[in-house]
Length: 271
Image (cartoon, rainbow, N blue to C red; front, side, top):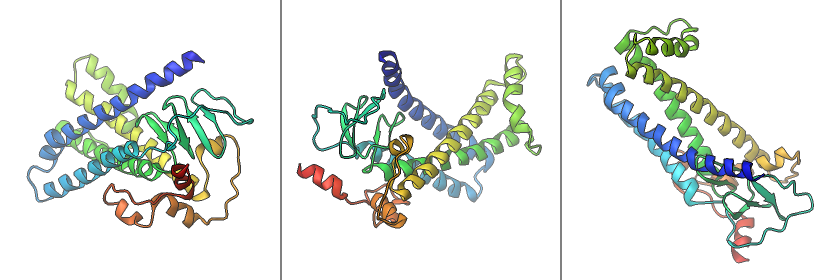
């Protein structure tokens, strides 16, 4: 148990550092290699710069909002008293009234969905909207970088991606060519980044679709994992409105607070 907890705490420190490192590397590659080489001061250069900055700013902005608006209870110091059906998992205890005590955050979490290691805190009803938007724009940034990365390798190193199997064999062949000294280090690094962007992009897209489905059903990941069927009187539109707020359209453009406090959160603050 202690070893598993130590492993989770280590992951909770490494994942944010990995995210920021990948972000900085992506920005450098775009402005120092991709845009100058592919577009070469063409009229489309400004358009691609604006699009890339829009994706990155929204991804980082919603990442920050996920941390700044945690799902923790206003009752900060609470001695965790487990409910009778608490599974006593490694990362969290189940309390009463839909609350959890996260062992990593060491706080009581309202409507806990899961603990996100990339943000280093728990995802609940208050920051679910920012987490979903973070996944959307991170996925968009990675897939956009993947397209420009393929275009850069095609222009700079004359690689052809017309064959669908090229992407499947690109990594093992690049590893062999790199250690044989047949390709430069930058080309090998870009090939690695293509697979990093593909992996992160598809993972974030999957998280996004899963979370939107759970929110529409009024269910959390913790409840789904335990097989709990939530009986809610609200429609899927009302459930989405509780998370995204009435100004949801503005939240898709700018990372702003668009959701009001729910009844559970208001009662928690009064307590």
